[in-house]
Length: 503
Image 1 (cartoon, one colour):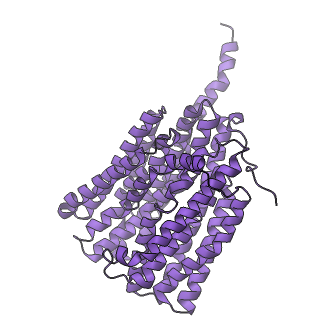
Image 2: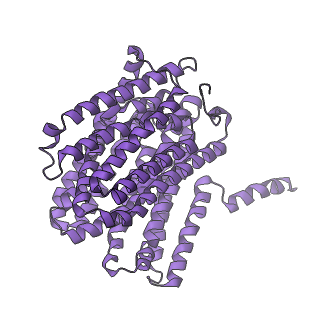
């Protein structure tokens, strides 16, 4: 097979109308969302199986290993794949294989060097931090897992910038299925407990490397050049501190809450957080499509800012629709499960939707600094989030308990959104339609308020009406943000008739 220079979908954006661009973006987001939810819910379906063979101690080991891999991830490769997103469309076609090969080589080489060094020094590095989780073999394997997993970064980024969404999702799901089969064998059949889970992840990571290498060899020529590397690092290296801090932010509320409430309350909060984080998961899928789309717009279209603003309206509508659906229907879902002990989940779930909606909106309205190559701003956004969320959590949780943790989360993500928006607008100003966005937010709040007036669960009538309410929200708001309401369209159709009438 010959080299692959570009995706067949990579038609010039300058040749497409806004409607065609929006349709392409919506298709990409839909595919990424399917991929994210397939792996997420696939993992949830395996939980009952794991419960039969894993002990609470095993889950404690896996939690510690998860922290290691999450914190290690931003360091491996020094965020070089992010430079591929930014520069891929700017590289001359004659140099693309060389420049991409340089970024790929540097990414994998630094991952091996950094990951290998941390794996060798796991004892002195990790023992002072983890007192109950054994470094050998568990945490050392966790470092190896993180290193092997990092080899997917550059190949998956290339598929994103090529808009090869289906290939991206197929590759991600294939990796998940391979890992699942290995873990089930080692945990259920071989009875290796938490160690089996970690070994399955490591083996799957190693087996996927040839696939990633083949994908890249078709598109890139491995090499290292100082000038190419300098360009990539100038963009990506400032992102590393922010990404490192960002890996701590999602757990700060539970880190503080665990010290002041009982396990039962913490468990209810954790379940509410699991449901509410669906909004953040949707945001993650949106980000996968939006950031390359946004950067390519800036390269190929003179009206890029206008298109971004109009597209942001549609994306915000999708996020508000998901959040409203969860808020309105959560009581019906929880009641249908039929476990009274979990009925209180909804009172925490609804307010938790707010910070996760802000987290999903932030990449849409706060990534202009990436287009402007002001990546040094990333750490300021992450530091602000960490300081606000952690500081307010320690201040509010002792006084307000779970409510304090939720408020701290809202303030943390809110500050992140505002700082990210300010810095992005400073670096690359976009005239977003704030009036329309305010109406969307107000419409979502009004919809939730109306749902509270309907018959409470368990009520088939109330449930049906809430479902209809959710179904009505999207088309009505879509007509509003698109400017294509029936009345307006009818007026435009009738106007020539009126203007043609004799006076």
